Length: 258
Image (cartoon, rainbow, N blue to C red; front, side):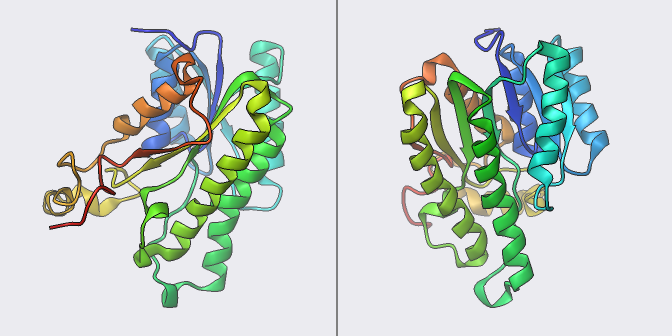
């Protein structure tokens, strides 16, 4: 086992489930102290911390319900307190903006309130998380924004969700340029179809087989597939990759479905 992140502190939003949980596990295995953010499911976050600690890693949970007024400030209040207790400092090295929502709504089915919630969670939250992270991130740090393969193709089935991920991709470009002089890399990491509880239909083998026909590597992704790419971007090996849209869709964007 490598320990390439020994001495680093990583913050993973939405770290209690799905892709975020897999990223938290992987960064902890690499030696990082991991802050596992959760919104409402304290038990799930506690379980992630327990698994990490039982494996010899270090982690703690931080609660904030993103999308609600003042949630980012609440998050940093909790994070700062816990980091000071554990490290004597509020500084950290890696921010993974994974928390998000993905309701499958077409244009005519999207209400104004649903649209506002998508913007609040998927765009506003990572924007202000990064804004407040700039003074806390150590030089040479990493920001990984979880995007989506749907930001690069026509996807009317969830048009508002796709729009939010396109906005995040543009934010990635601006932050990569702004923070580059400090050696901080900023990248978008874009999964495709990944079997998590956010995609309950993928628990059906028939659905997975059908979708696999349009994926070059011939299967639906698993959370660990994305976590491994995140670990690379977070590591010293990823030091020369910034402002990039990293396609981790298994080749879903390479051609048309047969």
